[in-house]
Image (cartoon, rainbow, N blue to C red; front, side):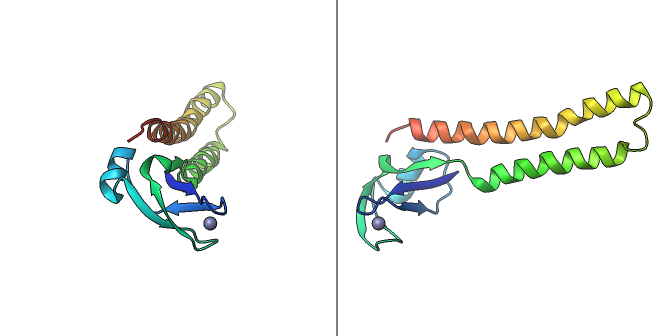
Length: 122
Ligand SMILES: [Zn+2]
């Protein structure tokens, strides 16, 4: 998850580099009110912990995509000379579910974390 808020002065994104699971944890870490500095307009302002929202971390989504592509690709590589008989086709199809499933679980989990964080107000 990536923590961020929007600068009240120039509306640009201010990122907060913390690794927390929910807003309560964030409040305990940085306090209910924290002073954040905007990298664009360099203005420092006080922000309430409720003003901080999260979005899906790009690196997790990329990682999930990588697993999906790499998993599917290597399965195809291992099966390329055996995709003649119906049985191996079925096995190949079945195994393809694994990278798709990992992809789905990773992205779903991240989505869930983001939803939970943004829902809970301190
Ligand atoms: Zn600003």
